[in-house]
Amino acid sequence: MPLTYSATLEVPILMKILAERINKIAPSPTMAVTARARELKAAGKDIIGLGAGEPDFDTPEHVKEAAVKALADGYTKYTDVPGSIELREAICNKFQRENSLRYTPDQIQVGCGGKQNIFNAIVATIEEGDEVIVPAPYWVSYPDIVLLAGGNPIVLPCSIENNFKINPEQLDAVITPKTKWLILNSPSNPTGAAYTKEEIKGLAKVLVQHPHVWIMTDDIYEHILYDGFEFSTIAEVEPQLYDRTLTLNGLSKAFSMTGWRVGYAAGPVGLIKAMNKIQSQSTSHTSSISQAASIAALNGPMDFLVERNQVFMERRDLVVEALSSIKGFKCLKPEGAFYVYPDCSGVIGKKSPEGHEIKDDSDLATYLLEAAGVAVVFGEAFGLSPFFRISYATGTDLLEDACQRIAEACSDLN
Image (cartoon, rainbow, N blue to C red; front, side):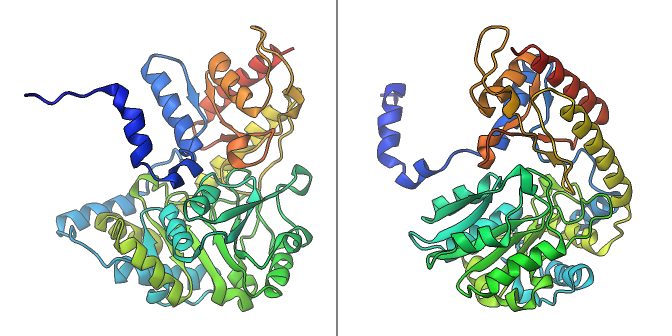
């Protein structure tokens, strides 16, 4: 007798099998926006997708060549869980060369993108009820990873008046005996705001007084900076924090290697060992070919960044000027990354030509997608409203068109 399937049984069966923890988190909003834009394009709609944090530049040729050579040489087997020794040595050299930080290979973990390093660290350290301070706006995955591990993300809102950055007084006020981590991201996703060396010193001074608090610093946009801004990372600025800092970075953004899935973390040996234990039971390691390419990236020339950052800066200026000219918007000029995070409070409460009220930034994002064919990510996804995020890591012509469409759609609101 053939097996039959009843769709009506799917929901109750799932409710019995799914763990309660899955209800604490949501799918990545940025991934969802990108997927929706692709669906609409595939259906023949004229859509400009500004949701993905993905450079439109190609991976540098010498990096791709290293991957091809690795394939030809048969470098297609398992590597060590934390990454090949050659790659970890290259990462150590990078930290010494660029950040004046000394690490040994046993202090390095390579993951399947930076997200896995964060996940490994949180799962390895968070007990039920532990607190993790997450300044908002934040990258969408930070609080959900904490929730999945049973912790409590303590969201610390940062105002546009302070360029979306926390100050020492705010940080000190929110630390409790349950605080286990502070997550810092500079330059920031979604705002592009970056902390100066002096600002980091101010935060470090507070953290030195709270020895139970560890620091997770996400430096993935380290090399995408403008107007002569100088990057600093907290373990470099305050050596007293070295032994309780996990410094995160990766190849995705600066080297346009999003699909290669290579992130890395540097920290105390004991923490890295615990993170490796988790990774050994999940992905084992990222692709051996991606690792070979990453060695070439870290050890090779980086002069291509000068031209690319110039293009990004020109796009930034274009988008900031265009959005700032729209009535009801306020848009700061970021120091790095490739995002802007405009304040849209001036259009909240207005109505579309069809009479639909724009009640929040989620409604605005829906309106821009439907009325203008422009996909953006609503601010609520990043923990601070009413704002929305635009990625300008796409063609200049598309950005000009998108900004014009946004302006026209907003002029139709009343």
